[in-house]
Image (cartoon, rainbow, N blue to C red; front, top):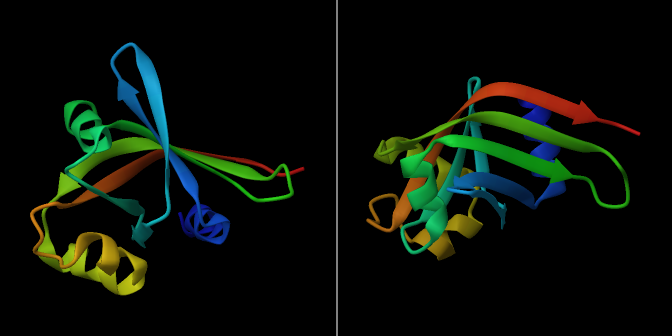
Length: 124
């Protein structure tokens, strides 16, 4: 997984695609963490992303490098992670997240573990 994680981190912004009933929903994210073969993404309870992930964990993460045709697509299953130690680790690895979520104990800070099913790369 490290190759995909490194690619996504290098891109900075990546897109999370969730199931919104009849249509997919894509939105930009910027905070990600890796643990073993799993990825972790953070969101808050004031948006639709967490509702969609709780209802249907099927997810894709897509990132593309600026000024190139290189991209990665990660397909997986997301499940909510309530482990405060993992939340703290995400905050430690992504200091910008502290301004967004405050602390690992914040009730509005949600963490999702993405169990990777498939990874696809395109390099021009």
